[in-house]
Image (cartoon, rainbow, N blue to C red; front, side, top):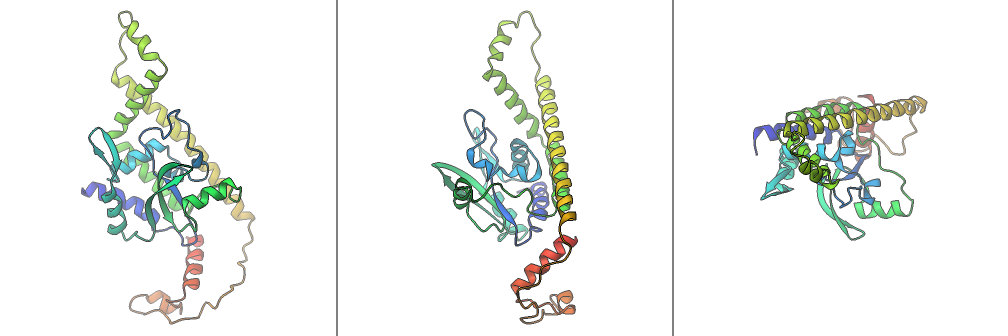
Length: 283
């Protein structure tokens, strides 16, 4: 793996490492091509969306970013998930407990999902709960707005620097043209009209992606405003603790000087989770 890929992975790791222990979700790993023949979303995407949803990115954009990170690789004429790339992300930045890549079969369809953070259920259980209407929607965010916004901006920079991005977009444009029967028409009128250059294809594809990104940025801004209103409406008084926050041994002053200073026990998991929640809200 190259240093450039490692630097890209570090951006994603910086987000994953800040996910609170009480939050997390499963996301479908993005695909370079449409996951269904008719180009429609998978039914499971309603509750288990593709990973790009987390950062308000299209599925194709998220795939390109992960490819640049080394989490996908080319094999022959196709592209496959690069397990080594995901392992590097987990072990280079000590993310083993924060993420997991695995395959699930939902209603006979095999999909590869990634666990980010600490959801309580597996994809199969989440889908069953959604079907029974026990769950209505996936979480809109699993970390702070500031963290999500910062990492999204950094991921977009990776996208803009990618040499693969325009190639993939051009392929999608050509596929759409052929699917609509426009390619045949263009060939018939070739003698009367100038051919469309690859530069035109790239320009059109880039403009379309820019439009999509702008729409997604607007949606993200609306989500942020809604969350801000919800936070303002929420009470500022925290509920009483249901556990003893002082139970356990005080932290080692050499390893955790601040925890020792405030007499926070290192072995009290409930106290640590509560502290993490409060710090996340404050930051």
